Image 1: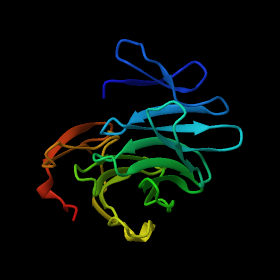
Image 2: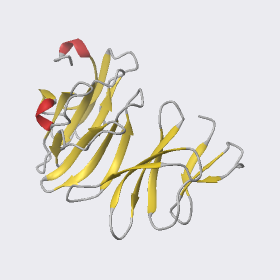
Image 3: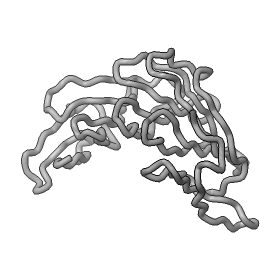
Image 4: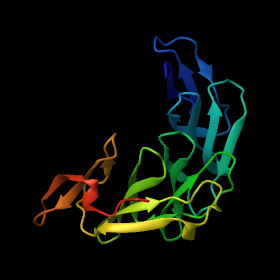
Length: 212
């Protein structure tokens, strides 16, 4: 990507060249936006938007006045974080639910589905092929778990029961964001040692239940 996306003083999404020229204001007043995020191919942007009436996730190309795909919030709260899949064909995002935070995964043009995972807090990383997520969930008591979330196949109904969640650790540390290496061979995550102490673990993924 040879352009920079940012939020201006009016809460609008703007892109610019690396030198600061060729400004393109992609959105219009009426909503305030946040977290503009480029797709992996650099052709599209996703961002969060909210007004006094509604909130949602928005996707569009880097074209002023271009078409916008809107995903209105349908949970009890607003979406507040998003993360493209490595191939840019799916979007993972967090949204407030009645019983915590929900992780939803959706393709462009696809109908919304329920949260695939719910927890007090959620952090995740994508596997390189976009078929699975490494998820760290935290509960209200400070405990948590690490799990593989294998996503439904393309074309399958976006239902929570279609996802396959395989927990492999119930005692991760407060280190919140797990990571998968670029070659998909290693995992990085926090592990509890003694009360108040933790360490960073780098592990061969073969030690744990692999995603399908």
